Amino acid sequence: MHLTFRQLAEMTGGELIRGADAATGSVVIDSREIKPDSVFFAIKGDRLDGHQFVSQALVTARGAVVSHVPENVPADKGIVRVDDTTIALQNLARSIRERYDFTLIAITGSAGKTTTKEMIATLVGSERRTFKSWGNFNNLIGCPLCIDNTPDDAEVVVSEMGMNHKGEIAQLAGLTHPDVGVYTNIGPVHIEFFGTIEKIAEAKRELLENVKPGGTIILNADNQYVMDISRGFEGRKVTYGIDHDADFRGVNIRERGLLGTTFEVGGHTFELSLPGRHNLENLLAAIAAARSIGISWEGIARGVQALKPAYHRGIILDAGGATIYDDTYNSNPYALGSALTLMAQADVSGRRIAVIGDMLELGDKELDYHRDAGKAIPKSVDTVIGVGKRSHALLDGAREAGFADGNLHHFDDAPSAGEFLKTFIRPGDLVLIKASRGIGLDRIVNMLTGHAEGAH
Image 1 (cartoon, helix red, strand yellow):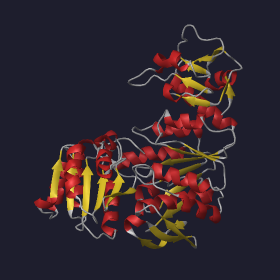
Image 2 (cartoon, one colour):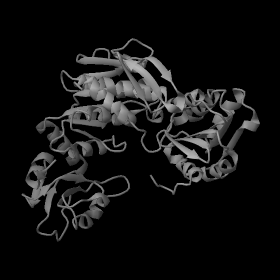
Image 3 (cartoon, helix red, strand yellow):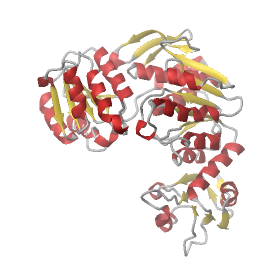
Image 4 (cartoon, helix red, strand yellow):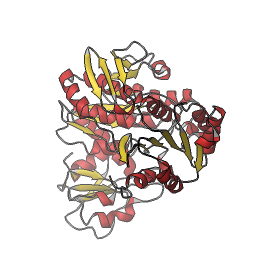
């Protein structure tokens, strides 16, 4: 959004200190991302206070929003003083939402939010000028930051809304009142903060409570928790699913394992290159959302053709004739189960090798979740390699389910697992690599494929 500092002061509820007519075209909170037209919001975080970087930011930025005014500000810079810079960032998002006429689609759920967001943006973008939040910026800072950077000509904005605590989604959705709320699924993710799945569902309900009056919610008909919380919603409900009757139901599904899925919906046939039922569910959610705002079936077909996996989220790579399925961005029991099912369906000439790292943020029952995940590993998997201290429980579960000790291996960290795999895998093998991001299994992918650390 292009705004002057006079407008910024008014929209954030702050005090204009100087530079009323200085114009800005982007909002940043990281001094390393500053461009000449940026306004730098000095956010006070848990570890860092953005005020330490204001003078450095002002070398390039057009100006700053601060809670205390720095000394010796260059004359050509704009400065707005506010009581709390995080609240100012949120107030700006609320003001932009009130003043500009774009359709806001917000996505929540336990798994699949980022993929669904990317899919919706791709499908809608086939016919409308579309802006999406980047990465998995879905919290009380990331969400407003997305809205604050919406281009002036955007017709549709697609944003995730995540949460670790009750009230977070209410605050986010209450700021922006989405036109369309999309639910992927509800399962035991971040359960350490909530205690039960029912409490997670209750917190996820905050999105539908805050969509615009007369707004639309997109619901996963196959997820009972999602359907339960939608009872009593008075706006428009649009359902999608595979197992249950739905407005957008995937039928005649041909799963080709890691090679993708062919299916029909609404009398139209599509081929999805992203593998797995979970990606088909995500796409059905995206089709339902796109159709709900008037995207044509032709536009949807163009969008589906353009879909590609995001970095470390199900990318297929070659490692000397073996196939690596790099799904190292994140993990939870639901997503791990989906990935393993996918592995079982793939046509493989060699062995199926599952490299499974610890799943984080599962609370005090984390070892039970790991053990249950181990018990559920399909019998068609030949070798299971656990990485990290919690994965001992996963291997115990696999053992209980009948896996022989010789087919189970444990390593404390990614580099030692990577060294073992370098000599263990052979041409024709299919290797799934999946863990929570904090375990760093992307290092194994780099070791096996010869990519430099951190290279995209």
